[in-house]
Image 1 (cartoon, rainbow, N blue to C red):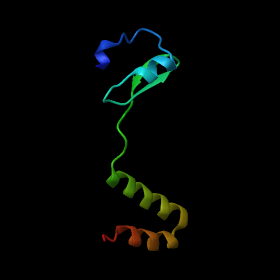
Image 2 (image 1 turned 120 degrees about the horizontal axis):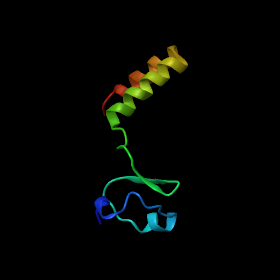
Image 3 (image 1 turned 60 degrees about the vertical axis):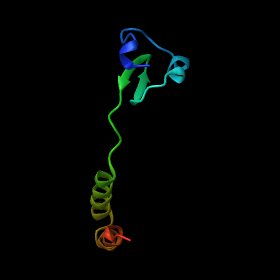
Length: 72
């Protein structure tokens, strides 16, 4: 089934949503279909974690970031 097979002007139910087998990520909000953006990649998440740690824990964060950046 393709997203283009659905009528985007129609209101759908959660039961309809459970039957769909699309490769792309979709969400249903108040009966309307919306495409979801892809999940962030591992590099994005690693950078985000480093920024969060530095902003939250300052000196402790440097230690944590150096541990996370080491490759096994």
